[in-house]
Amino acid sequence: MKVALRLNHQAIPTDLAEFDEIILATGIQPRLPEIEGIHHPKVLSYLDVLKARKPVGQKVAIIGAGGIGFDVAEWLSQNGPDSARSPELFWEEWQIDTSLQARGALRHQHAHLPASAREIWLLQRKPGVVGRNLGKTTGWIHRITLKYKGVHMMGGVQYLKIDDDGLHVAIEGHRQILPVDHVVICAGQEPNQTLLAECKNLNIPVHLIGGADVAAELDAKRAIKAGTELALQI
Image 1 (tube, helix red, strand yellow):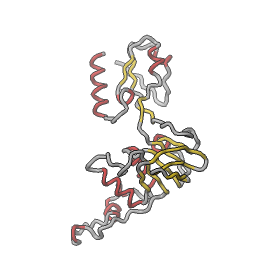
Image 2 (tube, one colour):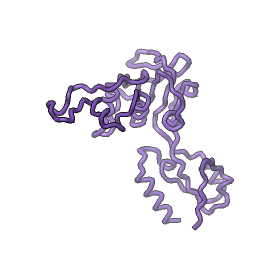
Image 3 (tube, rainbow, N blue to C red):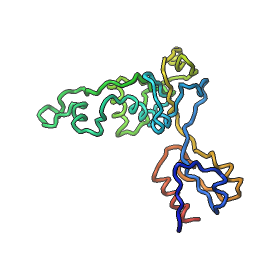
Image 4 (cartoon, one colour):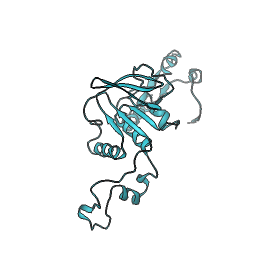
């Protein structure tokens, strides 16, 4: 079987017209919440930040405090070398006594993480603890890391609008303006089905797998299973 692999090429329906079956594994696209000014130049998606590496200012509001929101906050708050790549730096940041002479193997009960490189607001609509629904075994680590870095974590936030002045919000009925340079949207994702309608017009069977089928709770195991089962069927 001959396999043709095309890189750096954006597929269009006419590219697919000669095939017997079409499989769309186009993944997801960030969901844009309905907020006045959502298309303002200050607004970036998490893909703009993590994938496209677009410049981000010194004051940043992150809308959405799920796993993606925390990842973006940790990325933007990184100041200096990454301790995940250096055991010695990790021990220093968390005050771990590798000689095991100190009580509990801790030189000090408080971590010494460097302050965030930016002033960051991590926001969620739900009231209560920010990031409450993160993984039970690791969520507390993400929360405490951002706390030590000085990231502002705020729940119960109502998003009013985005304009040149920044992000307008209301918290417990009190309006305020966060004077940010950028607003990063981490409010979930939707299936990327931009090719679906046009492919159906080709009168060729079209199949969706992975994030292009279901964007919620992305799971590599589920996507691989769906791809394997579909390959066996067709």
